[in-house]
Length: 119
Image 1 (cartoon, rainbow, N blue to C red):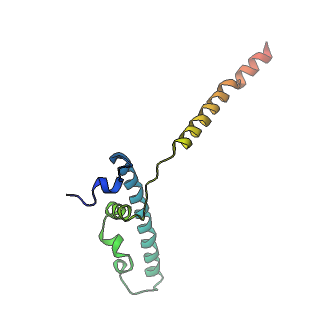
Image 2 (cartoon, rainbow, N blue to C red; image 1 turned 30 degrees about the vertical axis):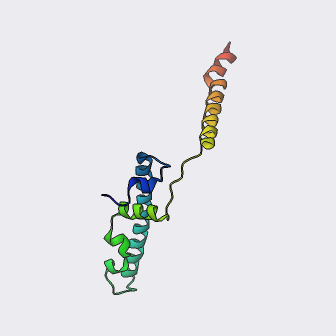
Image 3 (cartoon, helix red, strand yellow; image 1 turned 180 degrees about the vertical axis):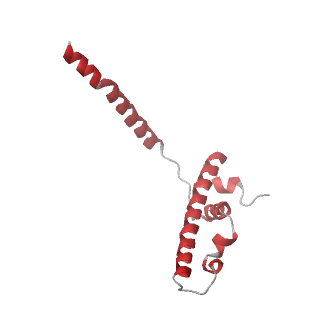
Protein backbone atom coordinates (compact mmCIF):
# COMPACT_ATOMS: atom_id res chain seq x y z
CA UNK A 1 0.00 0.00 0.00
CA UNK A 2 1.17 3.50 -0.80
CA UNK A 3 1.69 5.79 2.16
CA UNK A 4 0.25 8.36 2.57
CA UNK A 5 -2.94 7.31 0.81
CA UNK A 6 -4.84 9.49 -1.61
CA UNK A 7 -7.63 9.88 0.95
CA UNK A 8 -5.13 11.12 3.55
CA UNK A 9 -3.72 13.71 1.15
CA UNK A 10 -7.01 14.96 -0.28
CA UNK A 11 -8.96 14.87 3.00
CA UNK A 12 -12.04 14.30 0.81
CA UNK A 13 -11.85 17.91 -0.43
CA UNK A 14 -10.09 17.30 -3.74
CA UNK A 15 -10.21 14.57 -6.34
CA UNK A 16 -7.12 12.63 -7.35
CA UNK A 17 -6.61 14.66 -10.52
CA UNK A 18 -6.42 17.88 -8.51
CA UNK A 19 -4.01 16.07 -6.20
CA UNK A 20 -1.76 15.24 -9.16
CA UNK A 21 -1.70 18.89 -10.28
CA UNK A 22 -1.00 20.10 -6.73
CA UNK A 23 1.75 17.54 -6.27
CA UNK A 24 3.37 18.47 -9.58
CA UNK A 25 3.39 22.17 -8.69
CA UNK A 26 4.78 21.38 -5.23
CA UNK A 27 7.48 19.17 -6.75
CA UNK A 28 8.45 22.06 -9.01
CA UNK A 29 8.89 24.26 -5.93
CA UNK A 30 11.10 21.58 -4.36
CA UNK A 31 13.16 21.37 -7.54
CA UNK A 32 13.60 25.15 -7.55
CA UNK A 33 14.80 25.01 -3.92
CA UNK A 34 17.30 22.28 -4.86
CA UNK A 35 18.60 24.31 -7.81
CA UNK A 36 19.16 27.37 -5.58
CA UNK A 37 20.95 25.27 -2.96
CA UNK A 38 23.13 23.61 -5.59
CA UNK A 39 24.05 26.95 -7.19
CA UNK A 40 25.05 28.32 -3.78
CA UNK A 41 27.17 25.22 -3.12
CA UNK A 42 28.86 25.44 -6.54
CA UNK A 43 29.59 29.12 -5.93
CA UNK A 44 31.22 28.28 -2.58
CA UNK A 45 33.39 25.64 -4.24
CA UNK A 46 34.33 27.99 -7.11
CA UNK A 47 35.33 30.72 -4.64
CA UNK A 48 37.31 28.17 -2.62
CA UNK A 49 35.30 28.95 0.51
CA UNK A 50 35.12 25.28 1.44
CA UNK A 51 36.98 22.03 0.92
CA UNK A 52 33.83 19.89 1.17
CA UNK A 53 32.54 18.04 -1.90
CA UNK A 54 29.36 19.25 -3.60
CA UNK A 55 27.28 16.39 -2.22
CA UNK A 56 28.17 17.36 1.35
CA UNK A 57 26.98 20.92 0.83
CA UNK A 58 23.52 19.95 -0.45
CA UNK A 59 20.82 19.04 2.06
CA UNK A 60 20.31 15.25 2.36
CA UNK A 61 16.58 15.80 1.85
CA UNK A 62 17.17 17.07 -1.69
CA UNK A 63 20.10 14.79 -2.38
CA UNK A 64 18.56 11.47 -1.33
CA UNK A 65 14.89 11.77 -2.35
CA UNK A 66 12.96 12.59 -5.49
CA UNK A 67 11.13 15.92 -5.68
CA UNK A 68 7.71 14.26 -5.92
CA UNK A 69 8.32 12.21 -2.77
CA UNK A 70 9.43 15.33 -0.88
CA UNK A 71 6.36 17.24 -2.12
CA UNK A 72 3.99 14.46 -1.03
CA UNK A 73 5.66 14.32 2.37
CA UNK A 74 5.33 18.07 2.82
CA UNK A 75 1.68 17.98 1.80
CA UNK A 76 1.00 15.17 4.26
CA UNK A 77 2.79 17.02 7.08
CA UNK A 78 0.81 20.18 6.34
CA UNK A 79 3.81 22.25 5.26
CA UNK A 80 2.22 22.64 1.80
CA UNK A 81 -1.50 23.07 1.34
CA UNK A 82 -3.71 22.79 -1.74
CA UNK A 83 -6.12 25.67 -2.21
CA UNK A 84 -8.92 25.73 -4.74
CA UNK A 85 -9.92 28.97 -6.43
CA UNK A 86 -13.16 30.19 -4.98
CA UNK A 87 -16.19 30.15 -7.21
CA UNK A 88 -16.53 33.90 -6.72
CA UNK A 89 -13.09 34.52 -8.27
CA UNK A 90 -14.01 32.32 -11.23
CA UNK A 91 -17.28 34.22 -11.72
CA UNK A 92 -15.45 37.56 -11.62
CA UNK A 93 -12.85 36.34 -14.11
CA UNK A 94 -15.52 35.08 -16.51
CA UNK A 95 -17.49 38.35 -16.17
CA UNK A 96 -14.35 40.38 -16.93
CA UNK A 97 -13.69 38.22 -19.98
CA UNK A 98 -17.28 38.63 -21.18
CA UNK A 99 -17.10 42.43 -20.74
CA UNK A 100 -13.82 42.60 -22.65
CA UNK A 101 -15.31 40.54 -25.48
CA UNK A 102 -18.41 42.77 -25.55
CA UNK A 103 -16.22 45.88 -25.76
CA UNK A 104 -14.28 44.40 -28.67
CA UNK A 105 -17.53 43.68 -30.51
CA UNK A 106 -19.02 47.10 -29.69
CA UNK A 107 -15.91 49.06 -30.69
CA UNK A 108 -15.77 49.59 -34.45
CA UNK A 109 -12.57 48.60 -36.15
CA UNK A 110 -10.32 51.13 -37.84
CA UNK A 111 -11.30 49.78 -41.26
CA UNK A 112 -15.00 50.34 -40.52
CA UNK A 113 -14.30 53.90 -39.36
CA UNK A 114 -12.31 54.64 -42.53
CA UNK A 115 -15.06 53.16 -44.70
CA UNK A 116 -17.69 55.32 -42.98
CA UNK A 117 -15.54 58.43 -43.43
CA UNK A 118 -15.12 57.73 -47.17
CA UNK A 119 -18.87 57.44 -47.70
